Image 1 (cartoon, rainbow, N blue to C red):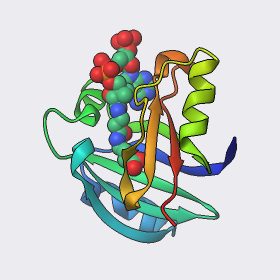
Image 2: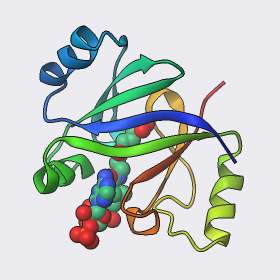
Image 3: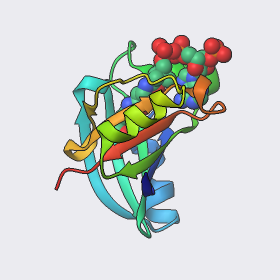
Length: 134
Ligand code: CMX
């Protein structure tokens, strides 16, 4: 069902403050910044091997990432796995009893179709499925 880890999401209070560590000190390839209005976040993508690091800065006090930062401070927010058939993956997980936050896919960064599994169903790790736009 899963083909690879697409990205690891890291919650940050400021992209400007966090980027130099990943881009300049670790030397990851910086792919750009994009606002995902539907999710109330601004994301910076950095490539490492065939996976990415996604820095997430909230754009509103109502963003889910604001809530996360208030509770935990900056840190790992989610792991995103790539799938080829997101509807099939959602159906299979729900069939196995997982609690989906998104029962139908939403639009994420780079036009990918995404769906989150609730952290209560995934051992405390917010888990994202993503099907890339071709
Ligand atoms: N990792 C682990 N646990 C988390 C979590 C996270 N990232 N975010 C929240 N939780 C926990 C909370 O601590 C809380 O636990 P307790 O009940 O023990 O206190 C529980 O999950 C519920 O949290 P909540 O924020 O009150 O619940 P909601 O149902 O309102 O929100 C969630 C759930 C996690 C889906 C939402 O907050 C969220 O983060 N959505 C994803 C947003 C996002 O990352 N968008 C970017 C996508 C960009 C892309 O990849 O393309």
